[in-house]
Image (tube, rainbow, N blue to C red; front, top):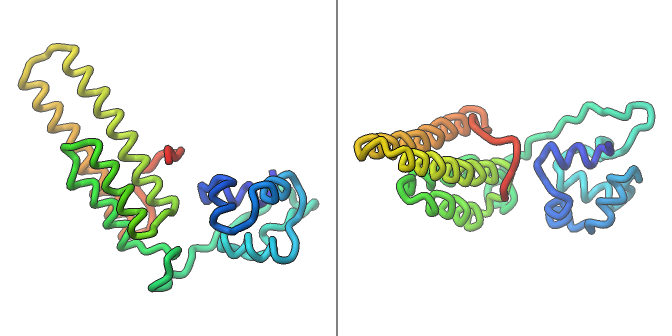
Length: 191
């Protein structure tokens, strides 16, 4: 596996997203991932877009499995593409306002991430987690209805479903504050 592909996958980027972020064509990214070393402008542009050192993108035939370290981007106020953890926390909290209206608990962070220009792996995971939770909550709720365990059971079930989402949101917010990452996340992205 090429270094570019490893780094791209570590950052949860598709080839198209990397192309959009760097301005390098998808075809060129595919060629590099097939084993061709990037050079000159392409090497500089990709390393800048991925926020890594140029030498980390070069395939080394002696060491086929490199030790890749992805540097955290420095926060620069006023820059559109920088990671602002206070904005990410706000995006996460936006779901809590709509936990009782499941489609809005997905739309609120999605719209807010676009407005605040915070399209990064953390915000994608926040939205993915809300989509997954909404689908799972619907399935559990429908099972509770089909089992016909009574009105009081259904009310308790709704309360537990809502509280579980509130817990996920609050726990992830605390982890964003402490370690700049999510406590609960999935191994895949829906968006």
